[in-house]
Image 1 (cartoon, rainbow, N blue to C red):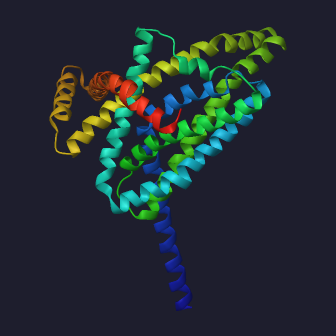
Image 2: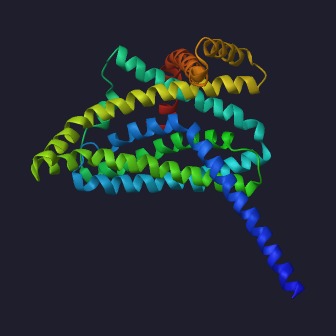
Image 3: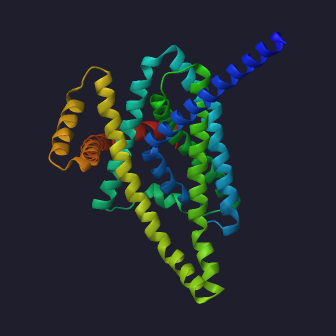
Length: 318
């Protein structure tokens, strides 16, 4: 009997540890996922373009194939690579994260540039040139999965940096959960977005007056939703990119910019009622990080478009 009681006690202790681990994983996953929101919003805003020009019955199968490729990118390539890097060369995480932040700043600044100075883009025009449908679908899916790899690398590296130090398996499971969770959110939202006009059109043709009004609202609201997602995604990219750079510089021993932003945010918070201090401090920090991201991104545009881009094109033959 004493042996049975001891066994039950051991089982209870294991269950308690497991429950604590689950709580740790859930908490870390939520924190890491929140930090990656800027990339996620932009991903959701950009992804619908990959199914533009295809028949309605091919949209969801294409999104499914892209989402499967995204999970494969995250779990089979990026997760093992990042865990090995974190275990054997953790000092490389901050520079890699800053490189991703620099890319976010560049992409955000380039979007702002296109809004302020609209101009034709030969690459984009080729991208929307529909040739053989089956061959084009394969090209689009493959291209989307490659683009997703870059965004997934940013998301996974950013998420890893936000996971509290713990045992290797908890960090790995947390990172896997974040990767899958973000993929489901992004491509679930993309599926809903690309089908919103079809749903609206169906409602507009059938049912009562209210249903038809809702349907017309969905159809008319689709362009506005995509525009709003694009704006929010651009602002979030600049904020997150600038924030990554300032924190990275602080970690590497250059805290001047981070400290300056922190002091300005504190001063702004002290100038408002106590109930608003937290929000004002966050908003000031985010705004200053975003301005920094825009400045850095604008500086990188000529280097990326005239040096790095052509070099990559020459090496890849594209």
